[in-house]
Length: 375
Image 1 (cartoon, one colour):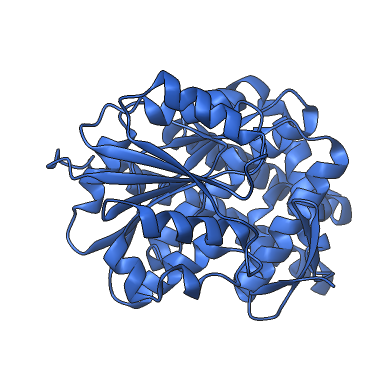
Image 2 (cartoon, helix red, strand yellow; image 1 turned 60 degrees about the vertical axis):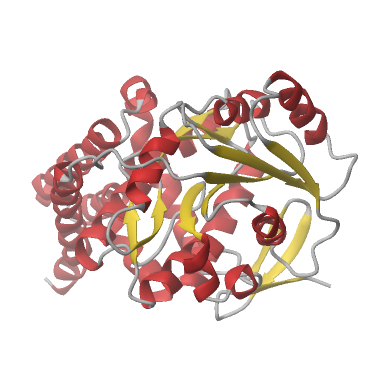
């Protein structure tokens, strides 16, 4: 009986978590879209390193924004970075769009992305900043939405939910399924229960003055999860962090198995360092593996496992469909069980080790969420 209760408790918790996702999704969808606002000038900051899959098309969507006043700043380390030729080509093609390319040199601290953002912010002409990764693709109306949301009462930062668009590899599709049916649910539940006290990284819009109040990018330079910390610090000042109504497309590329495993492990180890107790609580975000373990131990209680699978399916479907409008989940829904098991195994692996491999360099994660180059 004790074994039964021991195995049943996490399964029950996982079902409750799925119900919370359903409620949180409903509440997110009830928020009305922002009222049209005066289009204040905006600066888009784009840190680049090498050529991601689909880079030219990703960047092109930012040049094609239907917005009256914006500029784009790009940052690379060296003049021989292959991304330079892509930027130069687009600058010639869209000569009417103000844009600049900045060469930063080697970063003096671990987070090279933060160093690039800092250098671009120093040269940005406007006070509303949009920080967006190189693997993001958007529609022409993005800046209109983010500008309106940033002009809400006491809003310091707007963080965009994202729909993963995988490359051709099986492992990329598997990860995309996880991001679109699992990750976004956790974001929505956290938003509902505790408010947005964090940010998620691919695209963030913020006020320059708000960033300066928390110490600017110098405050974030030693953190791997600088996006999470940025939102956390801003929320602690009493300013608002909101989850945008605008969904970006995150092009995650085609990784082979080894690269995908390294990427997942880096993400899990970083999350464990950023919010340790939250990482432990992620056990409940894996309903299917928990249900299978329970069913294997107590076959006669199979209806409990079946109910758990049902709620997982409903929660995953409504986040992918209602929030992200995700064609990948519609097409490859049968991959969800495979992804859930892979996610559970990588979650367990994340409890071990404190090193990560990032852009060809090995770093050591420290207990406070900062990281340093491994010597």
